[in-house]
Length: 181
Image 1 (cartoon, rainbow, N blue to C red):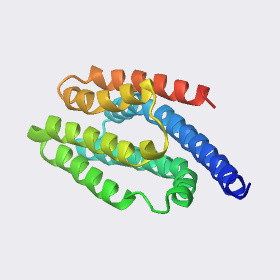
Image 2: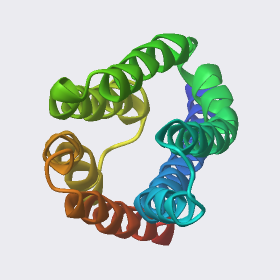
Image 3: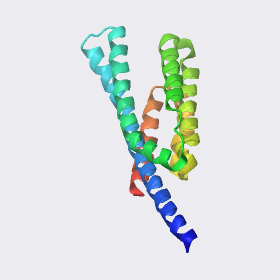
């Protein structure tokens, strides 16, 4: 009887954390599935307005900052729930530092852009597998989105149309993730 009193709340807490994390992943996928189109529209609008390359990159970095801020907001509640469950925080500061370095590398050194894009995709996928998917069981669409991401990011540096393939895959993953709720 006493073991059941302790175990039942733990099961309920696990179920709540998994639901919160699944919702966060769904919203994350949906948010970032719109990024390729947003980026393309931003560059097209900047170009039509006659903006310089520096101004276009500044607008693009501002767009990235908006997406990162929304992502942080999406995961804020999920991180608190996971911290309560797991007892430790994910390494957000390390991830942000690595991603900032890779984005800067791709922008400043175009000759290593494909490598930097692939490393960026690998860092994002590895971080999610090591944090979120330690608690939440990854589904087929999670694997599809996260394993194709580094490959398509590297190749998209050479073939811009592949950015849109990422968007399509992530839109599918987001819809499938949110449909589980």
